[in-house]
Image 1 (spheres, rainbow, N blue to C red):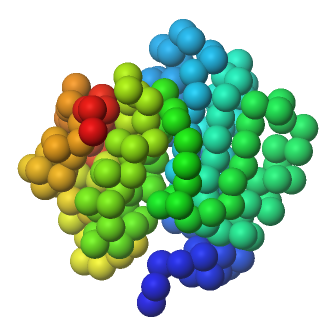
Image 2: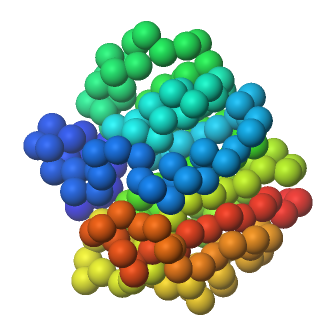
Length: 195
Protein backbone atom coordinates (compact mmCIF):
# COMPACT_ATOMS: atom_id res chain seq x y z
CA UNK A 1 0.00 0.00 0.00
CA UNK A 2 1.47 3.37 -0.98
CA UNK A 3 2.08 5.78 1.90
CA UNK A 4 0.30 8.59 0.09
CA UNK A 5 -2.18 11.32 1.00
CA UNK A 6 -5.09 8.88 1.07
CA UNK A 7 -3.25 6.46 3.34
CA UNK A 8 -2.48 9.14 5.93
CA UNK A 9 -5.91 10.80 5.69
CA UNK A 10 -7.50 7.40 6.30
CA UNK A 11 -5.33 6.96 9.39
CA UNK A 12 -6.54 10.32 10.74
CA UNK A 13 -10.18 9.62 9.84
CA UNK A 14 -10.07 6.30 11.71
CA UNK A 15 -8.09 7.83 14.59
CA UNK A 16 -5.35 5.27 13.95
CA UNK A 17 -2.59 7.58 15.18
CA UNK A 18 -0.49 5.50 17.55
CA UNK A 19 2.50 7.79 17.00
CA UNK A 20 0.64 10.74 18.56
CA UNK A 21 1.83 11.28 22.13
CA UNK A 22 -0.97 13.78 22.79
CA UNK A 23 1.51 16.54 23.62
CA UNK A 24 4.97 17.73 22.71
CA UNK A 25 7.38 15.02 23.84
CA UNK A 26 9.86 15.71 26.62
CA UNK A 27 13.04 15.66 24.45
CA UNK A 28 11.69 18.32 22.09
CA UNK A 29 10.14 20.31 24.94
CA UNK A 30 13.52 20.44 26.67
CA UNK A 31 15.35 21.38 23.46
CA UNK A 32 12.87 24.10 22.48
CA UNK A 33 12.86 25.52 26.02
CA UNK A 34 16.58 26.36 25.84
CA UNK A 35 16.30 28.27 22.52
CA UNK A 36 16.63 32.02 23.05
CA UNK A 37 16.03 33.46 19.55
CA UNK A 38 12.26 33.46 19.10
CA UNK A 39 12.55 34.81 15.54
CA UNK A 40 14.21 31.78 13.96
CA UNK A 41 12.31 30.13 11.11
CA UNK A 42 11.18 26.64 12.09
CA UNK A 43 9.83 23.84 9.88
CA UNK A 44 7.95 20.82 11.23
CA UNK A 45 7.51 18.29 8.40
CA UNK A 46 4.93 15.55 8.79
CA UNK A 47 3.64 17.72 11.60
CA UNK A 48 0.77 15.53 12.75
CA UNK A 49 -1.56 17.16 15.25
CA UNK A 50 0.73 20.12 15.77
CA UNK A 51 1.72 19.62 19.41
CA UNK A 52 5.20 21.03 18.78
CA UNK A 53 3.71 24.05 17.02
CA UNK A 54 1.37 24.75 19.91
CA UNK A 55 4.30 24.59 22.33
CA UNK A 56 6.38 26.90 20.15
CA UNK A 57 3.55 29.44 19.94
CA UNK A 58 3.09 29.35 23.72
CA UNK A 59 6.76 30.19 24.08
CA UNK A 60 6.76 33.16 21.73
CA UNK A 61 8.21 31.73 18.52
CA UNK A 62 7.04 33.74 15.55
CA UNK A 63 7.98 31.90 12.32
CA UNK A 64 6.64 28.34 12.26
CA UNK A 65 5.78 26.31 9.16
CA UNK A 66 3.87 23.05 9.34
CA UNK A 67 3.86 20.67 6.37
CA UNK A 68 1.75 17.55 6.09
CA UNK A 69 0.43 15.52 3.18
CA UNK A 70 -2.98 14.67 4.69
CA UNK A 71 -5.84 16.90 3.55
CA UNK A 72 -7.94 15.70 6.49
CA UNK A 73 -5.25 16.63 8.97
CA UNK A 74 -4.52 20.01 7.37
CA UNK A 75 -8.20 20.92 7.57
CA UNK A 76 -8.16 20.05 11.28
CA UNK A 77 -5.00 22.10 11.81
CA UNK A 78 -6.54 25.13 10.08
CA UNK A 79 -9.38 24.96 12.63
CA UNK A 80 -7.09 24.25 15.56
CA UNK A 81 -4.82 27.21 14.79
CA UNK A 82 -7.41 29.61 13.32
CA UNK A 83 -6.57 32.21 15.97
CA UNK A 84 -2.81 31.74 15.76
CA UNK A 85 -0.54 34.67 14.89
CA UNK A 86 0.21 35.21 11.19
CA UNK A 87 3.70 33.77 11.64
CA UNK A 88 2.23 30.25 11.67
CA UNK A 89 1.88 28.73 8.22
CA UNK A 90 0.11 25.43 7.47
CA UNK A 91 0.98 23.85 4.13
CA UNK A 92 -0.75 20.75 2.82
CA UNK A 93 1.76 19.25 0.42
CA UNK A 94 4.27 16.54 -0.26
CA UNK A 95 7.34 17.40 1.81
CA UNK A 96 9.63 16.62 -1.12
CA UNK A 97 7.99 19.38 -3.17
CA UNK A 98 8.28 22.00 -0.43
CA UNK A 99 10.50 25.05 -0.98
CA UNK A 100 11.91 27.34 1.66
CA UNK A 101 14.82 28.15 3.92
CA UNK A 102 14.82 27.38 7.64
CA UNK A 103 17.05 27.90 10.65
CA UNK A 104 15.67 24.81 12.38
CA UNK A 105 13.80 21.70 11.28
CA UNK A 106 12.23 19.57 14.00
CA UNK A 107 12.09 15.81 13.43
CA UNK A 108 9.39 13.94 15.33
CA UNK A 109 8.05 10.68 13.82
CA UNK A 110 8.35 11.96 10.23
CA UNK A 111 11.47 10.08 9.13
CA UNK A 112 10.06 6.79 10.43
CA UNK A 113 6.80 7.33 8.51
CA UNK A 114 8.56 7.47 5.14
CA UNK A 115 9.23 4.42 3.04
CA UNK A 116 12.92 3.55 3.66
CA UNK A 117 13.57 3.91 -0.08
CA UNK A 118 13.14 7.67 0.43
CA UNK A 119 15.75 8.07 3.16
CA UNK A 120 18.53 9.45 0.96
CA UNK A 121 16.01 11.83 -0.61
CA UNK A 122 14.98 12.89 2.92
CA UNK A 123 18.57 13.69 3.87
CA UNK A 124 19.19 15.67 0.67
CA UNK A 125 15.90 17.57 0.99
CA UNK A 126 16.56 18.46 4.64
CA UNK A 127 19.98 19.81 3.66
CA UNK A 128 18.38 21.82 0.84
CA UNK A 129 15.70 23.32 3.11
CA UNK A 130 18.11 24.45 5.81
CA UNK A 131 19.86 27.80 5.74
CA UNK A 132 23.69 27.64 5.79
CA UNK A 133 23.85 27.54 9.61
CA UNK A 134 20.62 25.57 9.94
CA UNK A 135 20.03 22.56 12.18
CA UNK A 136 17.98 19.38 11.99
CA UNK A 137 17.04 18.38 15.54
CA UNK A 138 14.80 15.68 16.92
CA UNK A 139 14.36 11.97 17.38
CA UNK A 140 14.91 8.81 15.36
CA UNK A 141 13.91 5.30 16.39
CA UNK A 142 16.86 3.26 17.62
CA UNK A 143 15.19 -0.06 16.95
CA UNK A 144 14.00 -2.14 14.03
CA UNK A 145 10.35 -2.97 13.37
CA UNK A 146 8.92 -6.05 11.64
CA UNK A 147 7.09 -3.86 9.14
CA UNK A 148 6.02 -0.27 8.95
CA UNK A 149 5.27 2.44 9.30
CA UNK A 150 6.96 3.13 11.60
CA UNK A 151 10.21 2.08 9.97
CA UNK A 152 13.14 1.88 12.33
CA UNK A 153 16.89 1.78 12.13
CA UNK A 154 20.08 2.13 14.12
CA UNK A 155 22.83 4.63 14.76
CA UNK A 156 25.35 3.12 12.34
CA UNK A 157 22.86 3.19 9.48
CA UNK A 158 21.75 6.73 10.27
CA UNK A 159 25.34 7.95 10.39
CA UNK A 160 26.09 6.45 6.96
CA UNK A 161 22.96 8.08 5.58
CA UNK A 162 23.33 11.52 7.16
CA UNK A 163 27.07 12.24 7.33
CA UNK A 164 27.35 13.24 3.64
CA UNK A 165 24.79 16.00 4.28
CA UNK A 166 25.28 17.03 7.92
CA UNK A 167 27.83 17.52 10.65
CA UNK A 168 26.59 15.33 13.47
CA UNK A 169 26.84 17.33 16.69
CA UNK A 170 24.71 14.85 18.64
CA UNK A 171 23.41 11.37 17.87
CA UNK A 172 23.01 9.47 21.09
CA UNK A 173 20.49 7.43 23.05
CA UNK A 174 17.77 9.73 24.31
CA UNK A 175 17.80 10.02 28.12
CA UNK A 176 14.37 11.66 28.45
CA UNK A 177 12.11 9.75 26.06
CA UNK A 178 8.43 9.43 26.84
CA UNK A 179 7.42 6.13 28.50
CA UNK A 180 6.52 4.05 25.43
CA UNK A 181 9.77 5.01 23.68
CA UNK A 182 12.28 4.55 26.51
CA UNK A 183 15.50 2.93 25.24
CA UNK A 184 14.17 3.10 21.67
CA UNK A 185 15.19 6.58 20.48
CA UNK A 186 18.24 8.55 19.44
CA UNK A 187 18.34 12.30 19.94
CA UNK A 188 19.89 14.07 16.96
CA UNK A 189 21.32 17.54 16.51
CA UNK A 190 22.72 17.92 13.00
CA UNK A 191 24.22 20.98 11.31
CA UNK A 192 23.89 21.48 7.59
CA UNK A 193 26.99 20.88 5.50
CA UNK A 194 27.43 23.12 2.46
CA UNK A 195 26.08 21.48 -0.66
